[in-house]
Image (cartoon, rainbow, N blue to C red; front, side):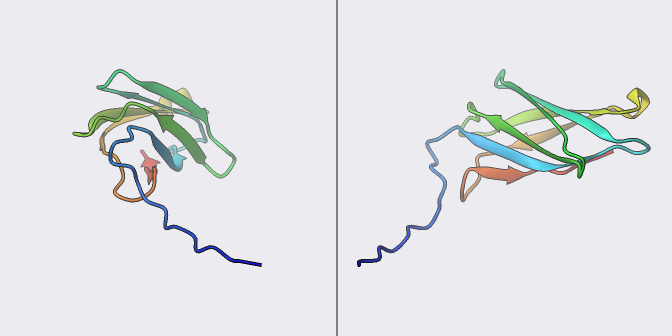
Length: 102
């Protein structure tokens, strides 16, 4: 039996694919959904788990990065909010963490 060494995970600087994971919280209610739209013209949305976790995927993050507007939907519409954040390709791997708190 031969064992092969595993290669370390690393980002492909030529790949525009970026996964975004995080936690979304609302001030006085429960987060129910997260959506993201970028200046590159991309959009994705996700539900939010009971623990507040969400996961999004972008396939067009440019080398120079992009502004992304995150919209958080809450069980009480008065708590809905948006955040604009600069998104860049990660240095290592293909996933970034972006927690969203109002």
